[in-house]
Length: 178
Image (cartoon, rainbow, N blue to C red; front, side, top):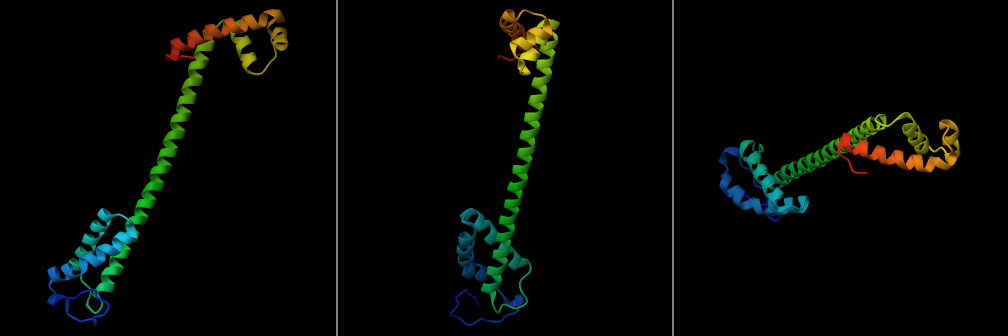
């Protein structure tokens, strides 16, 4: 006995023990597959879910086959929605993990670079280190001259030479190129 998913035919009631799975599969597979392709937009995924639907039919058939087509549509739809929800959640988790990893890497690099910069600064003498720190902290040449006791007309040259020394030290400590 073949039960097709044709809406124009009357629903037939048969006991699960009386059905021929191969006939039911052959009669209903294409209908279920088309439905799933429309739902998922992916033929390969639809085929996988259709197979899972028919495995459920084989392993745990409905008590009555009065509306087998409806049962197959409901089961396949639920499986498709579960899969799509799972994919959506997986993507969210992956994006969150990627964001955390990126933030961690950025913080690590920033911290590493800051440590290397501090190490390079420690190689400079006090005058050069003070001039650079004050310059990059926003102090004017006049203010740097007052703090360091260097003539204001010499501050630019002192900073330029200090910067060259700093770059060389920084490149040695971390193999960086500035």
